[in-house]
Amino acid sequence: MLAAWDSMVAAVAEEEDHEGLLAKPFADAGVGDGGVRVPKMQHRLTAELDKVAFAAYKAELADLAIDGFPYCAAEAARDQAARAWLTTLPVGCAAFTNGEFAEVAATYFGVKSPCMIPHVARRIQNTSSVVDAFGHVFFTDVRILNRKSVRTAWHDSVATVIEGSLREARVSYDREVLGVFADLVPADAATSFFEQHAGKGARDKAGIVPDFKLVPGGRAAQLADVKTIGFAKSRYGRSPARRGGTLPCDERAGIINREYRLHAEKLDKKFYPDEASPGPFERRLGSFGSVVGFVAGYFGELSKGAHEVLAMAAEEIAERTWVEAGATSLDHAKSIQKQRLYREWGVASVRAVARIKIEGLGLIGAPSSIPRPDYGRDAAAKRARDAAYARAARGTGGTFGVAYEQ
Image (cartoon, rainbow, N blue to C red; front, side, top):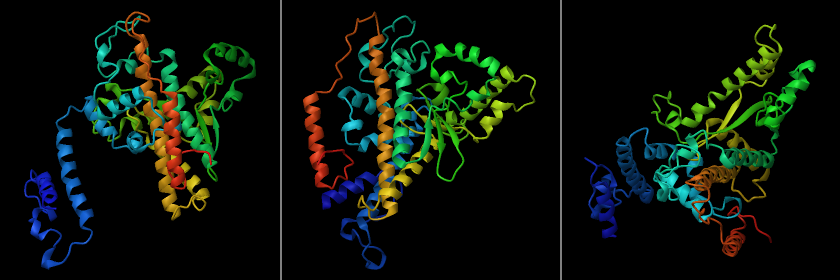
C-alpha cells in the first residue's frame, strides 16, 4: 500500500502547489478535515490523477505545431467515433487484418505509416509525386485520389453503415435519391440531358442526387450527403480559432448546403433562364431545408450532423428493444446502443482509410515492382477467434454484441 501511495504521489509531484488527497502523508490517507473518512476515495484519487495527467497532456499538445499530424490526431481523438475502434471486439464486420490494425493505430496516435516507411521518397507511377512517411499523398494528389476506386469505397463504407443503422432503427429513408429533381428537367431537354450524363454514372443522371432522404417519424423530409476528408493542410492545417471554432468535419459539412444550392442555381439557369430566382430546382431544394452533411474525417471523427443521426438511430433502437435486451432502464439502453453504433461507424471509416494506404502500395515505383504485402487473414485462425468470442458472448447473454448461432 505504501509503495502504491508513493507511486501516486510521484505522479502528481511535478504539479506546483498540488492540493488534494495525494498532498497528505500516507498515514492520513483517506482522512478528511476533522478526522472524517473521505467518501468514494478511489473515485476521487482517480479524478485527481486524471486531472494532473490531462494538464501535462495539454502542455505537451501546446508544444506541437497546429498544422502537424500529431496535433491534428490528438484533436480528432476527442471525438467518440475516432476512438471507438479502441474498445471494439475484432470480429465480424469489425474485424481488422494485421496490416489494417497497424495503420489504424498509427493514424490514431499521429505517427508514421508502417506500410509507407520502407518506401519513403519513392516515385508513384505516372506522377511526379513521391511517397511520404504518413501516406498523405494518397489523399492529396488528385491524380491518384481515387485510383482503384478506393476513395469511393471509403465513402460507400460510411454510407452503408449509416444505412444499416437507419434500417435497424426503422427510420424511413431513401438511399441515393435519383428522382428527387429529375422531373424538373423540361421534357424537350430531358433526352439530351440524360444522354449527356449517361456515361457519368447513375448519380449524375438526375442532375442532383443526395446520398439520403430521411423521413423521421412526424418530421419533414430532409436531404443528407456523405462526404469524406483526407489529411491535407487545407482541411486540418489551421487552428480551431481560425476555423471559427469548428472542427474540420463540421467545417466541411457547413458548405455542403451551399454546394447543393449552387448546383440547383446552375440547373435553373440552364433550363429556366427566364424565371426569376429562386427557380424550380432551387425552390425544390429549399423545400427540404438545409442539406445535412454526414462527414467522416481522416481520423474517423464525425461531423455534428452524423453524430445527431447516430443518436437518433440509437434512441429508436433502444426504445423498441430495451426490455427484451435486459437493460436496466431506457437511458441505459440508449447509452449501450450509442456505444455500439459508434464502434460500427468508427471502425468502418478508419479501416477504409487504412485500406487506401495499403492499396497505394501497388502504385509505388514501376508497375508490379513492389509485391503487395499479404495483409490477408489466416482464415482458420479467424474462424477460431470468432468462435471463441461467440462462446464468450453466450456466457454473458450475448451482451458482447457478437453475432453467434445458438
